[in-house]
Length: 320
Image (cartoon, rainbow, N blue to C red; front, side, top):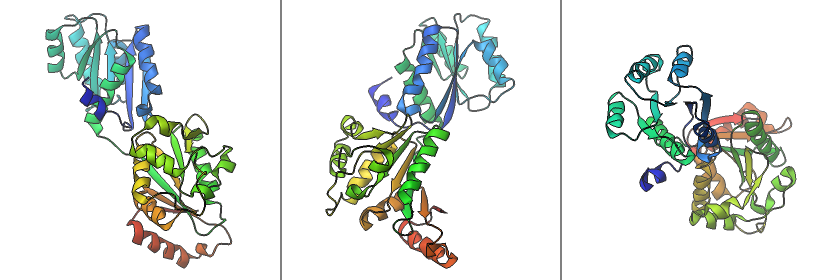
């Protein structure tokens, strides 16, 4: 894979399914290790010990995946009918990749003419397999962005930050989705206490790392809540000073959303400038209230809807 292709695939891949059938131990291990690649957070990778016959049996009963990888020890005259039988049971749009024993240009051309997406020669390193799958999925589905969910309180003290943390826990624990929590409150943040960490950075430092595309520095600014849940360990910001400008926050969010399918932004105690930016970029907006808050009156709810609509156009809106 060329350097240009590698650059194109350095993004979070769309939600999809990949299946690998092989009897080779090294190939099976390479396929299983793909799940550790951050790009595959939304990709379900099924690894089975088997061959083209095993795959044909499986997809005669079940829906075929987006990408199907088959390894074979021999590619002879009998293999082509087996491949055609498999194709008859696959859904339209399934891309097939064959792993074979020989580096044969004529064989490669023959398989491509049959509709096979790619042909790889064993042994196949995990990074090579990951790049081929990534390129295939992007060609199939394009690059699909992550979801940014903004949490805002109807007033102070209604538990917006607690709800944001709990939603992050649910997404990571119950759904197994990689999730990032960003608190735009700066030094006013309560998440260090709620999640049990010491603030180790400021928004100015995080924005500088994002501006320089310094992924290593930004990674050191994250606190790991659990295997799938991370938060930007801010909170060391000076309370009475502005945090960062809106363009800097946008650059930081874009960098985080490349790697995390779900990004939760707590805007309960941030500046109007940052609140407007985050709400305008959000896929979903959650308005948090409580039983004594007058916003539960339907007229006040609609007043809030109109306020948010004026700033961010129409978004999916939820009221807690």
